Length: 250
Image 1: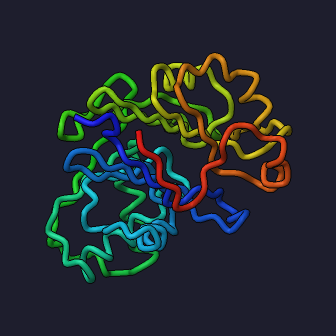
Image 2: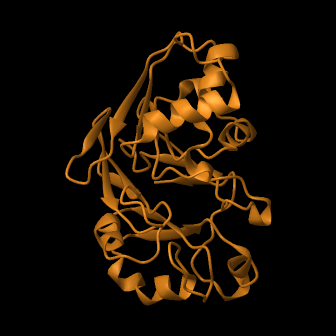
């Protein structure tokens, strides 16, 4: 087995407002025979096409929280499977407890009546639970921790463990000690960092993150989800800010 057992493509690394022209959050991970997404924001199908990634090959989509820039691309993924790729491969959707209802509602709002008839491929739902690790196939496991983003209790940081390698993803969160648990021993952690020096509820800022950096026991840390303040201070940032389309081997 090679050292590089997980291949990550940063399909979308932006925030809800599209600062820097970045697409909404979406990270594609491939390992063994599996292809999964961490988050699927509204622009994800565009990003997948740009990166040369086949939507029909995706086995699982894991949603960190139910904001449109993180789950709004699911109806488009289903639509592509129905009309373009004529998908038959099952699709598993994992996320907060309300994910299925919200996907159904969003699909009806965007394309009324289109999903009334059953799809030609199975769509199943699983619920994230910090006390439970979910098998993803090929020996991979999905873990999660609760993080702090807005008032919802169902906001999660995600972690994939496979063949002795691991990728952690904060989702959207201000600083919380659960990120220490999420990062522990990870080969790579992708951390939301909206601001540079201005703490605000629900989101991370760079200076707070750097003050806590030694507690994050991960080998590599990269940043995502930047706002204007972060983009204006790139010359002061030592931790890499991941770009749309960037590929990382773990």
